[in-house]
Length: 164
Length: 291
Image (cartoon, rainbow over all chains, first blue to last red; front, side, top):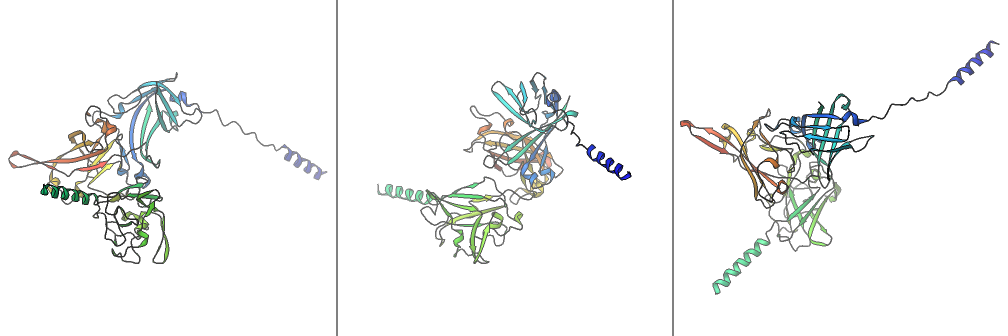
């Protein structure tokens, strides 16, 4: 009788094991509302990609250009992404070259890697260096120069912005 | 009349000789290589050069600072000999272009009875284990017996991208830039080159002068007296954007700029209240075309 109860107990235990249902990971991240707002440039860096790949010393690899031009700090630059899909940018006294107004869109709503700015027939694609910190009000834009015949990246520009 | 004909003949002969003395042109692919870059092709156009008309063209290449300095394809054994160039130095003809020849890497050869593959420029010069030793190489093109040759003395040379950073008298950051980029030029007076005025070492108020030139070496924009800043590495630096250096002539834009010339100058205060301006040589570099 005791053995019968033990077998019955084990059978119940085994059959009661069911695979757990994997809970939903979460809603897809919608970056648009996070990007909406005014962003000010806090740092502008230039990287020599060749030097970086060869681990040259930092002073021969990266240059901070934020305030390199006296009277023309890149920190003057700001850009506002509006919820309605329009944007305005202000270069201030900086030599920043970006469309001053128009519409903005993500190149991919699910996995964005760039913001596309449009003004009439003009289009400017701003690569997103990182969206990891957008939720805490930090974002990086990236611009690269590539060698025409090899497609190899030669120079990188990193624009770090914070939300105002 | 006779003298006139003789004069014309002399001029004609002179031009003929000059034409046969032209430097060969060449194209390196990819356009920028370092000592370890593989899959390199160098195409030589011998039109008008001393080897124009030859079916078999050989390359004699050497790298300053190496011992021996000659490329391993130029000789067999351990010692280079101008008089007995290796068959490995014979350039490949370019199909359909009788005046063009090429050298491609990797290059498989039999050298001193052993099959060898040179994958890159470092291996071509026998420094595959220490590629940082080679920074550039010069070459001339010649006939097998050496009776015909293009000019030597680094008249034609290939500069390699550095593998290791080393301080230099002049550099730009980034090392290679396009005319759309922010450019920083550095002068390191602790690396003062021979031939430069040693007074530069005691100068104050170091400033820079810059000229931007088009493809025909015509100066489009010039600016002088640009202030420099002394960096923590002891270099004098100044940064510029080619588009902001000055006002371009009508019809010209920064897109026409192909070259840059930079001269640094300093001031020495002399007794009696006079000053002396001391200048460096002119540093010149080409702008790259980037996407």
